[in-house]
Length: 471
Image (tube, rainbow, N blue to C red; front, top):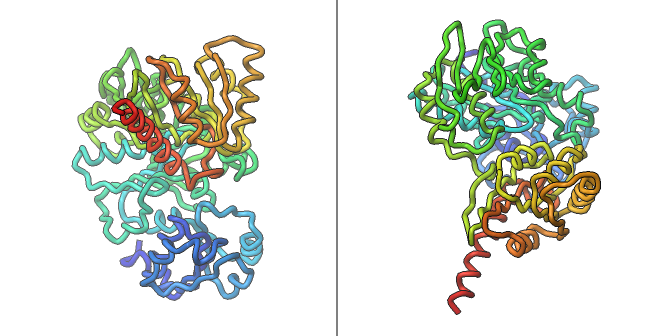
């Protein structure tokens, strides 16, 4: 890396496509580096008021309300936000002209002086990223956590030192354009997701593969052994490979054996702790813990720090987050579950009868396995949003050929109506679980907005009940 990590950008003519969180971070980073930045977004000036205010002190030009072909004239680089599909006409033409494309992940990975742990997967990447970040801090390492989770790390690049540790969540959208891999890379799992964007499972896997494809022999690849697609990537990287598994004692990596979590690296085996000590609920979270331990191990974080974190880490917001208990019913927010696969993991985390709230917008994913599991594990299903009718239909179809716990299905239009319906049918001992299986974009900005609204509705419901009891 050169003395100035941004020297190569000074004077370059750069277009940033998409002014969401990643786009704002890229525009700010590039403008401060001395690039001539033009930002383009399909939205209008009024719709982008907050983002424009964040860049008001910088010499940025704008082309709003569309992506005109004139943006390509004299352009040296196009930086693409994750939400912008790569098959739009402007980017097709840019490729034809040989104009290079980059993502925020590419800009950061090319320039970061510290060890970067990159984490991707169809499910669990945010929890694993947060766990590794906490393990780094518990070990006393200066640790930066961000990427697809929370903070865009480009904002911190100037303050990151060579001896620091960076833990970076990476989505398939960010990985589509990278031509550099992090020195430590994890692929937790690859199951059907975002097929509305990628088109085919093969294209989705190809995007995930890029996190390990450009590694060096001295690098580390940490792969989920229990997931066929993740395990297969061992053949796609020149890096040293370690695995994590909850069913197999892997030769190198982290695993569960006889009720204990163990780490085996470089011929040394250590017990991390007891399975019962893991605070997070669900077998899917056990895999996240094992992945985090394997990653922490390869960067030299001691087992004592891992043990401390797995005993105390409460989880990440909107991921099987306990909201509160009311009249003997526990309410949980799992709004992050934007694919049927994630709902399966949530359902398998409970033994209690479940009142499930499912819906949102479908991503063209298979629902059959979800439907069978819902018949077996869900006492009452309430569907809402664009996909509500389809989900209810799939479960009804499964219920005609199998028996289980399911007592009833109710269709409503909105999340507000779903919460009201759940309050009516829930009984003491039940769990009311928001685990939608679809995206939030039919009614909300994102899954966090949906989860926040769910928690607000639950608390409002309880407050109103208390007021009525007093009058």
